Image 1 (spheres, rainbow, N blue to C red):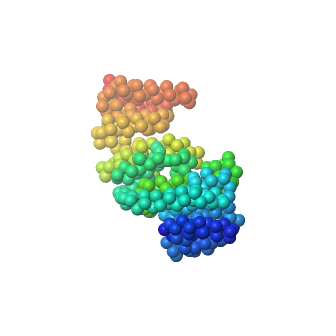
Image 2 (cartoon, rainbow, N blue to C red):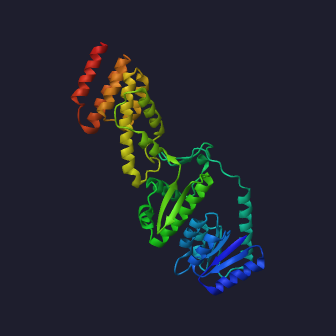
Image 3 (cartoon, one colour):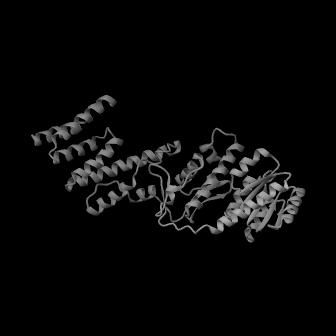
Amino acid sequence: MKAILIDDEKPALMQLERMIQTDGRVNVTGTYMNPRDGFAHLAKDKTDIVFLDIGMPEMNGLQAGEYIQQIDPDIRIVYVTAYADYALDAFELNALDYVLKPVDPLRFAKTIARIEEDVGRRSLRPAAVVQEPAVLCLKRLTLQDAAGAGDRLKWRTQKAQELLAYLIHMRGQWVTKDAIMDQLWPEYKQDKAITHLHTSVYQIRRMLKEWGAVSAGVEYSQDSYRIILDGIATDVEQFEQGEADEPVTTESGWQRNDRLLALYRGDYLEEHDYDWAKAARGELSRRFVQLSLHTAAYELATGRERLAIRRLGAVQEKEPYSEECCLLLMKAYASLKDYGSLTSQYESFVRVLHTDLGIEPDRETAEAYRRFVQELA
């Protein structure tokens, strides 16, 4: 196993190098006091492990870890720190282990053993095979593939899940660290918020790797992040690209709408209730309602009243004050000669409008009801 050491203190570098050489299981191929010199080494020489100091003046180890992951996400990082309060943060981050200065030989031997165990475990791991991966955002965030692996993924923290959802929401745009921290961790001071951000990014990367989609990842550059989902569709994008706000006039148009509406398992990220998603949630819900109304109108025109009723029932749950939905439902019940359901639908609609809004139905709706009743008499 090959390793490099990065620490701004020359004595600390020398002590750690001697300890590694004495152990004999790891080959040190470079020692650096400047992180950027270490990055240059990693870019041209395949390396298994980086022993990385956290408390460096030019760039702390947490930031350096981000750059290392951009170079090679398979590099194992062992953080080295003189402060015990950094230990937990380091372990939670993109690190295989951490050691405290001055490095204790017995504790260091356990670190090397952990590295060997991780190397062996990864070499035995079967290659992931992902077929037709997709990111689902309607109702809840789900990473899905044909093998069902996405359903088994477990998030360690809710904030990591929210960060992934937010980056997906931004659709590949670069988002600055400050903007992310203001959105997700506004209650924390900057140093604590940065630690939470780094922790969450690491968890996302680990989750994407476990998911097995090799074209998915989180990129970091110039203090900004973005999500990469090359070749991976989201259900929202599929819905938006196919949706057309126009009446359905052909069977192929109905089939297209039926497929799109089947994607709509629920409102955009509704189970997570993120504040930043509310505007998009409202717009997508509006488009779902309009698409459903166009589709149901075609179903009524082609003798599929019961299918239209089921579709319109879902619309009415979202839009209980929709005159158009009430009209289509009454038309469906009248076509089926279901006088009881026709009357119940109209009376219920009148009651909801009066109780909630203090208004009466439009004249067109009231006249349509009277006409349907007369036709069934």
